[in-house]
Length: 164
Image (cartoon, rainbow, N blue to C red; front, side, top):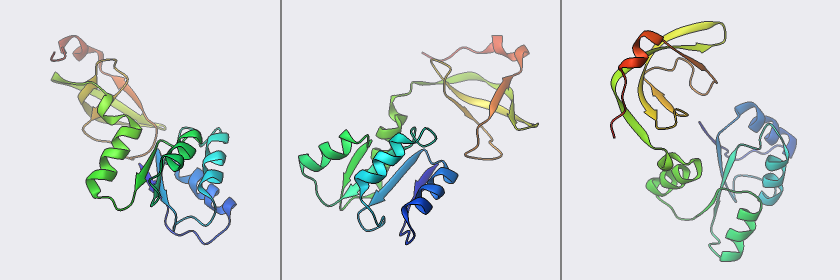
């Protein structure tokens, strides 16, 4: 989930309340969208334990080395220079979130599993699994953006072998 913040005309506390409720993985904001300084926002995000994992991408018209170093020093994942294309933003978000660094292997057989969100469970199948087993791609997620647990159906585990 990526939280895009556009034109909050309220105070800083309202903005941070919205951010805490959204629990975005990545926050992208620009000079004209937020009505207080980006360094202040970056400090608040990195100081708050519930928001610390949020990756921040700053959009700016100032592509100087000093600007980039300022925001990198405050914990921003990247600085994106205006103007930019859709592919620029997609690749920047991918780099910040580390999407391109995961080694995903296609499994030879789809693995049945049970996904638990709260008290209920949903039957799903794992389509891809990383070499470390830390990241998976499933064919169905009933509530995107929520944490979930995966319970493997053990009878089928022995039938998998990742492609090399």
